[in-house]
Image 1 (tube, one colour):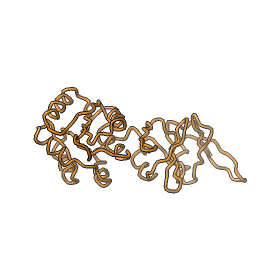
Image 2 (spheres, helix red, strand yellow):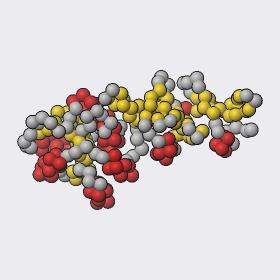
Image 3 (cartoon, one colour):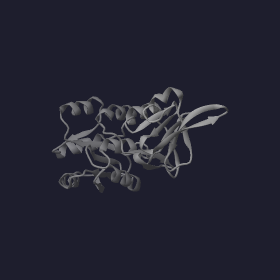
Image 4 (cartoon, one colour):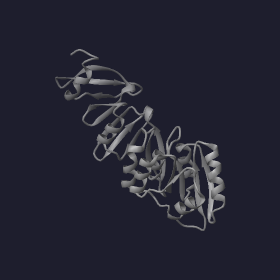
Length: 248
């Protein structure tokens, strides 16, 4: 981290907690508080605008929690170091310690905050993966765009289609490419998306219905989607998903 000052953004949905962090940071030499956020989405916006050295993230926040925000922040061109603030019990604290992730247990002590800032560093991919069991279901996908991160709400995604090493994320207006495994996305978001084909997950809320179409003499079921003209072919091994909805 370069520069004479360590620039910090804090994110916590509780004003008293932000006030306490603000007061503690004011008494630590070489540290400058450059922004405050009420949830993870705001923290990411500030991180992109201000490029702080450190994000102080509460774990449980509305809209987007700290773990999801940390995951998105790692895709920035200059990712900030992450320090979590938490009121989790001993089990979660052990998870943080085991994976060498900096955390501050509330109520936060000034000497502990100063120590965490001193050793703050960017999270490693393995550390983020180890934190996934503590994360609630994500609310957004993040797309890298010339050093910036675009956040795409999960509820706006119509389908996810695997193509080579990328996954195409389709919304009503646009397509984006993300570097994630379709299998891991299915495991995480299977309550919202159906795997209608080996290479495609479709949002259940975006399926308008099904119809049979003939292609080169072969009759296949297709999912009719809301808001987009294309359809998604249903693989034969997934026909069991249709049995309660249509008759063959």
